[in-house]
Image (cartoon, rainbow, N blue to C red):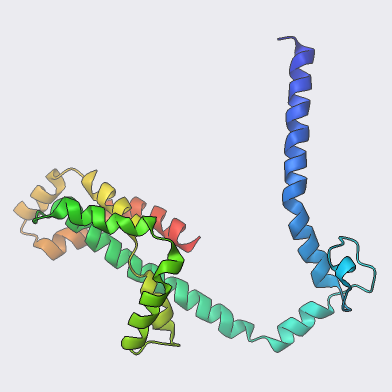
Length: 205
């Protein structure tokens, strides 16, 4: 391939990437323009990227003054932290059980557990709501967090992480007098931190 041909291909690639980036940025530009409009717009003006009336930051000031943003941010932080904390406990326990413990039907139960990944989330709305109401958690933060405490993806990830750890660590800890709780807390959980960190990133995002 000649140098000129290579430059032409690179130019075409850059133009295609620029067109894709521009298409991706249009909705964000529209949201910004719409937020800066100070007057009610007509149907034609709403879809325009160039506002016809006055613009300013009055909408932002009004939203900030009327909204309870500190409370909303606190609730968001509390909910994210609570869900992530609950998930780390449940996926670690389930992942260890499926990776290390031997019990009848372990593989089939694990496969059934993974069926959650195939369910469309709206299917679970009514069962979750019924359960939350029966537990007396309706319209409370724990009721919002509870349906997310279990994660099939997190269980699968932690199962694979626990399976990647050599059993020599467990044997050495057992010979040293560690019981099951000490083994999990002081040995295995320290070794699966990368898996927990990866799951935490996926869960929060």
